[in-house]
Every structure is written in structure tokens, then in C-alpha cells.
Image 1 (cartoon, one colour):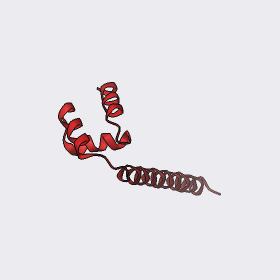
Image 2: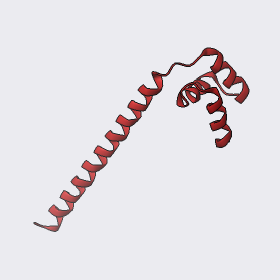
Image 3: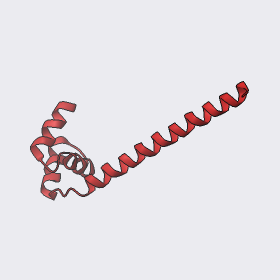
Image 4: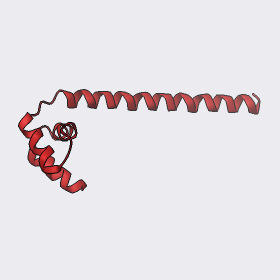
Length: 82
């Protein structure tokens, strides 16, 4: 085996690992998006979070979904991140 063949095989292996890692990350993101989409949140809660935190409704809705629709947890998490 020549050095060039060895380098090409190494490069192919590295690229294959990178592709697999990217696919796994993409699959994990899709699974998380599906999990969040399945969580229902109240329009009243979305409006409350949006008004109190001065956020667009879509952002408030996402924050609520990340905290399973719990307004108290949403406010607490936002306060810790701010």
C-alpha cells in the first residue's frame, strides 16, 4: 500500500464518520422538533409569556413547549438565561 492509498483511505474513513455524525445530529434535531410539536400550549399562556418577556409569539410558544407548557418553568429558565 502506498502512502497515497493510505491517505485516501484515511480521508474516506474520516468523511464517512463526518457524514454519519451529521446524519445523527440531523435525525436528533428532527426528533426534538417532532417532540416539541406534539406539546400543546395554551394561547393565553403564549400571550402572557410573549407580553411579559417582550418576545414574538412564535418564540414564546417555543419556550413554553421546551418547558412542557409550564409558564412558571418558562419564566424561571428565561430569567436564568438572561
